[in-house]
Amino acid sequence: MVVVGFTVSCKKSNNDGDGSGVPQGTSGTRDELTKDSIYLYAQQTYFWNVGMPSYSSFNPRQYSSNNAILAALKVLPSTGGKDKYSFIDDGSVATQLGGAGEDYGFSANFDTSDLLRVKYVYPGSPADLQGLKRGYQITKVNGGGTSRSSSTDIANLNASIFGDNPSISLTVLKPGDVSVDIVINRAKYDINPVLSSNTFTIGAKKVGYIVFNSFTSNSLPALDAAFAKFSTDGVTELVVDLRYNGGGSVSTSEAFTNLIAPPSQNGKIMYTTYWTKTMQDGAATILQNQKFYGKDTQGNTRLFSMFDYSYKPTMAAGNQENFTKRGALNGLTRVYFLVTGGTASASELLINNLKPVMDVKLIGKTTYGKPVGFFSIRIDKNDLYIPQFQTKNQLGQGDYFSGMTVDKDVADDLTKDFGDPSEKMLAQALYYSANNNFSALAKDNTLSSTSGATKVQVDAANEKLNHEFKGMVETRKLKFK
Image (cartoon, rainbow, N blue to C red):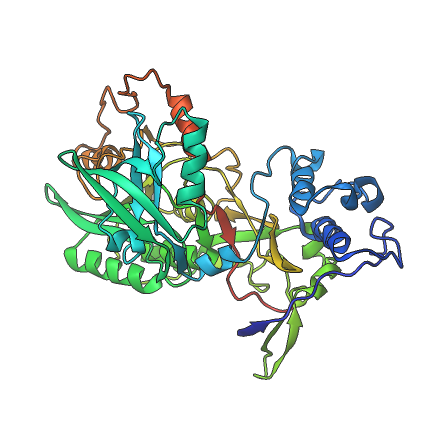
């Protein structure tokens, strides 16, 4: 099936047949009908929909905003407190998922010395064109300070770096403490999530290294090129840096898995997708309102809906994936993943897929914990993202709601650029490759700040600056019933 366009309608008030929907004939304003729709889509497609209250008990129209409804859904007893994922978006996520950026092209975090530093820059972005590099210390943003402990500064950082201003003014310290003023203008650019790649020689070994920052749907050419180089270099171990990768396209995660996985896994189960029981049973009739144009099995273009798909956890339904080797890199014996609390969703899917089939080591900090995913539900002018499925690998493993724990606990080293062999996370991977164990560095996780900041305080400040998308979006070609 090839999707050629979307025409999505807002859900109208009706009765869903079980007495828990909007009473027949109920009218309302556009705002009230939108609130109804958020509840009704959750009632039939939400991963934790079992045990949800009835429409009259929940009364979505009582809430002051759409986000307030979503907040109420996330704390329902049926979720068990697990939903930290649902959100409403204006369409920006879909644009970013397609690889189209329209911002400054960089992000920032506080380091273990309590200093604000550039944490990444997208190649070809406005920030890259102005010479901004990972590791540069930022001392001023739009004239304001960069103190982690100042709520005024934190508010200014969020409004300036992650807001929608046409430009941003930075004062940065380059290596050697050279202070430079930079003005970056917001612009459109193509997101290239491969931020760095290199091959290291460790004794007789060749170890590949790749930084992958987002599972965009346009990233496969860059991934294929990087892995072709690894194959030419004779790489036998691989370091995949996902420390800031919050996820994205499921199909891109599958392709990445197949680039790494051994050919001996061809034809064996990679993972299975488990949609809500309501969807598996073909009872999520509200999905009839999510319409799109596509081609049928005879090649004719016609109108379909998301209700026309099968959501059963079988290969026939398109919800069970097998390994299919991609590329020529066939001799990998071990893969190291560099991860943090920002590593989520499609990144975790990649890791979970590979754990049963090869030697996998995790270095850094416990991952975010998002074994569930979704597709967007268009309601009026916004996209609703609520978890609708969970993935499990070939061993049935996939309950990492609290995150994946690491084999070596290491703090993110923002003072070093990607690919610097002295950067603490990468250094641990290279050390393990050479010695078959991790280095016992005493100061891996200590704060060197003299300001009295604790790791908890710095992490809390960084969480306020964490605007990276975290999600696993179903982008595969599902099969019709």
